[in-house]
Length: 301
Ligand code: PLP
Image 1 (spheres, helix red, strand yellow):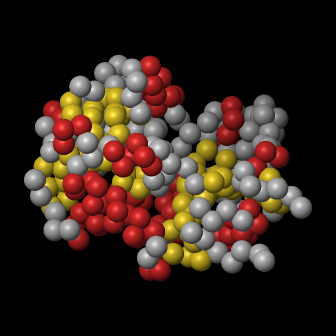
Image 2 (cartoon, helix red, strand yellow; image 1 turned 180 degrees about the horizontal axis):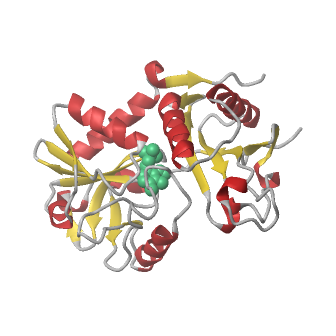
């Protein structure tokens, strides 16, 4: 029997163990990071908010002028078959639209590339380890690396342009922090590698609007804050305002709501997870179990 315990991939209609999944070296996905993608979580045997992730994926494909030749039903079928075959009940499920290889060898015209779709899934990924998140993450706010400007690479179309994040992660790790947040050139905070950020002050909560991916977990967080009676604003968030917040938290499909205990030297809630973020973290895990958001997967056997 094939071992899918490390994950599976769907490529050209075939489902293979993750270690056997490959794409060509001349694919612009590889040579130019020319990819748009999305990642939907599978939790206890069901996709979470699949429609929202597919909406964003299709909008990203259109923004990148790609045509993968598959409609939503076919994408859903591919992802469902792949996860079912993997047997993974908690998974990180990637759907990828790649620019592909030029159909005329050597062409520099992006319109002449054969766009294609593939998917892959691996056991659920926590961007911050759960025990660290429960206690409150320690974040490095980079002083030297800026987020790629949104008028250079559109952050709303989820992409593989991670040069800025990777440089920032080296800084953060070398300084002994869990992960990094990047500012823009105007002195506002943007986002980090795999997450959005929120600042809580009293009953108000603010998250950056421009220059960031509009995360599906960000949407969950905004909905949960509103349901908890908080005022929610999406707008520019100056670094000074972030540092004066009562609490800060991150949002990501890889682990939900992550309380922040510290940014650089600044400690929030005496260097622990704050009460608002801790409550939202629990509410997010309750949402993962809510049938209203779940698309159940029919596993073989
Ligand atoms: N920002 C970036 C750059 C990301 O890559 C991600 C997710 O991977 C997020 C924010 C959070 O988005 P979501 O909540 O949809 O996972």
